[in-house]
Image 1 (tube, rainbow, N blue to C red):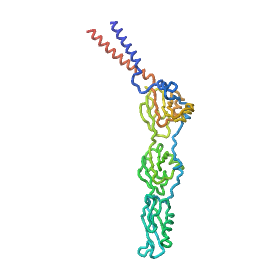
Image 2 (cartoon, helix red, strand yellow):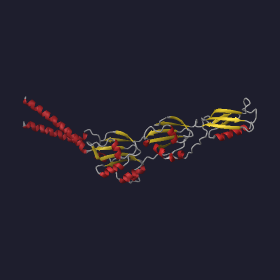
Image 3 (cartoon, rainbow, N blue to C red):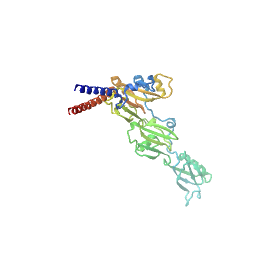
Image 4 (cartoon, one colour):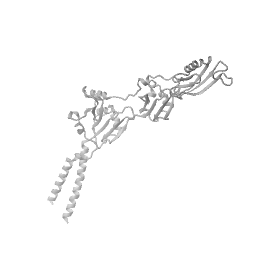
Length: 380
């Protein structure tokens, strides 16, 4: 009997020892802090490990600024009466002779309505020929036509009227009340005014970007800035394409908080806010001393952060946060997350021990069952 108990205990001890030795092979949600630190450049790895402090926060503090370049901001507002391709022009022509060029039924006046300005900007006027209308105001076009007709009829009187805005238009798509082609009219010659006519944004303007594409060039602005600061508004041009969308920036969370891709909902987001959006730290597995932010840092910032002016190109930098102290919490509250960052919360060392112990207890229970079975067999 003693020999049997001794044998059972030895088997249990061997199984426990084997379980603890192989516990590193147990399933887990994240690497440990020690494993990540082992991959630093200082230890022949390929990433720079940088603890977050006030200096690092200041050097990496960048806010995505959007605004229009000179090709957009310096373009003047089109005159409300500037004729554009696609406009429709109406004329009234009066002559000082009874049998004039346009006389009908004894009348000295004649009307020419609905003359379409073609894609090249021209119209055709009888006896005056093909005339460039686009780019002119109705008054300047009146003078041109008068001069042309004066060669054939004495002192003609010409009245020109433009159906404003039917030719010049922009295309608006995305998160707006009304998508489609919107004409540029007297009241909608700027981006802000045409956005209002389209019904504004259908989502929170706090994190909405407005993109304007013109002649192959692209400009962007935050919708909130456009609405709040008239100096950032721009004049529109025929053919502009306007796209309204939610902030497309994202970051990824991994490890002891679960895996997810999180969208920016505000222009800036701190590491502490990011962890909140990720659902917070898992109290059973997360290591609050091992919060890592993986980033491909641009050359200028990497040089400053690492105090190494010889660095060339973007660098792989891993920023480390430790929120076990009040100051660490403040650091996490001030350190900004960037587009494309990966936040990894490591697994606490004790989590693996808990898993190992769970396996051991399960193994011990199995041993007790085997021992009882052995006793039953021997008793028989």
